[in-house]
Image (cartoon, rainbow, N blue to C red; front, top):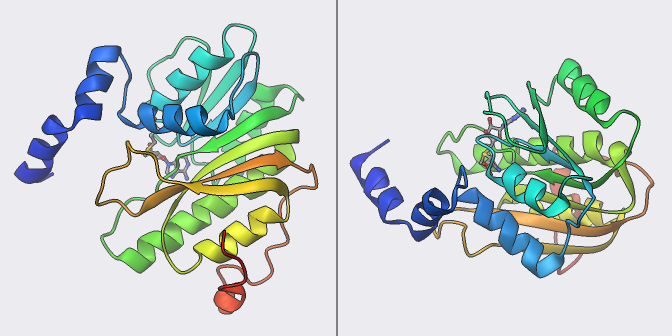
Amino acid sequence: MGERWVNEHRRDGYTRRAKKEGYRSRAAYKLMQVNKKFRVIHRNDIVLDLGCAPGGWSQVAANIVEAKGLVVGVDLDQVDPIPGVTLVRGDMTHEITQASVRACLGGRLAHVVLSDMSPSISGNYGLDHFRSMQLSKLTLDFGLPLLSEGGHLVVKAFEGGEMTAFANHIKTRFARVKRFRPDATRKASSELYVVALGYDGRGPPEWGDFLGEDADDEEGSDDW
Ligand SMILES: C[S@@+](CC[C@H](N)C(=O)[O-])C[C@H]1O[C@@H](n2cnc3c(N)ncnc32)[C@H](O)[C@@H]1O
């Protein structure tokens, strides 16, 4: 971490606010801004939070769903306990982690699937975009079979050539699909969130060659 990054981080209003208001990350404000605009999470909901460390989104979700709801948070990293949140430590690409998350739901379906999963940043724009798309795709492949009909999805992605095709695949399963860049996202970041509302219950999209050699075939087919 360079001196410049540390200074910018200190100056950042959301970082200071998170510290003052007891949130574990400035990312908490991104989910608050998503939820203010799209109303994805409600009281009593069951929420999956993939890539939850250090826990800002899970804190926000737990506050909204209240005691009768459930938040299941998963991350590669250790997360300190959060009231109202069931935590799983593991790699979401591993079946054992996926099985643990399913076990936490105890046969119930989630109302909302969130994913703020982010690959380790290499600095290579194309590579980081590709890895982020792989995590986004994983979110749908794992999360949609666990999402109830009418449920909502919020998934992070880094801008790049596969974004339009990704959004078009999501559109085959949701009534409304929007892209959203919260004010709390850093200006220099290429991240955005895909907010998908009203799941039709049909399971993951048929991906075809998405992320394969012919992945950009669908480019330009929709102005989402
Ligand atoms: C930007 S952070 C999430 C911040 C979080 N939403 C918050 O509010 O505190 C991204 C997280 O994704 C996690 N992650 C990346 N790949 C993962 C994977 N394959 N399985 C589980 N977690 C993963 C990282 O460990 C990291 O903690």
